[in-house]
Image 1: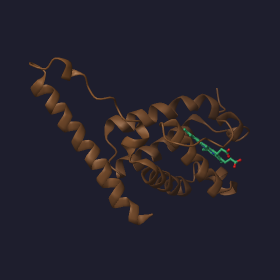
Image 2 (image 1 turned 180 degrees about the vertical axis):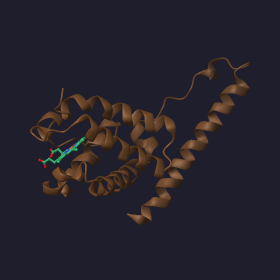
Image 3 (image 1 turned 90 degrees about the vertical axis):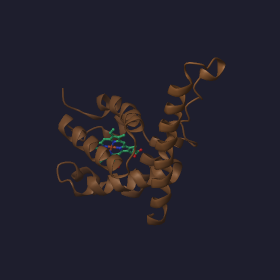
Image 4 (image 1 turned 180 degrees about the horizontal axis):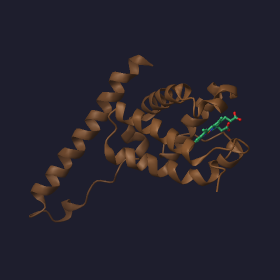
Length: 160
Ligand code: HEM
């Protein structure tokens, strides 16, 4: 995994730099531009995050944080972690426009009966944010990923 990190980070850095560069170009040419003014279509979030190695690195770092958090790790202690890891990778890959399919249970079925609270959900999101910050994922991509996962709260949390 470590050998991917420099690649992941440089891809993220490149993504960031090109975004800034195109924004600057837009600003400087907008006064005269006609048909060129159309922005290039945005790449899928999966690609902007850095593809498979980046998603895997994010999930691994995130699961490491979850494993150390006693407020949320009791369920994971009895779960089959390699399977959950694989399904999380699939869920994020498919959810961000990457290839493949999600082979896991839906969010309601996967979490039913665990009595997961809003505070636990928030703690988990906090760990994901810490991971994304560690990998220097730009604010736009971070916001897009959180906006994909946030609406799953209703299916996962079991308190009113
Ligand atoms: C956005 C938030 C979350 C997402 C996207 C998510 C996603 C997933 C996925 C994809 C699985 C595997 C499903 C399967 O086995 O088919 C899973 C399982 C699991 N999740 Fe979550 N989860 C979230 C929040 C939480 C929270 C807050 C907790 C507990 C505090 C939690 C505890 C678990 C446990 C214990 C399992 C394993 C269940 C089993 O093996 O039977 N999850 N989750």
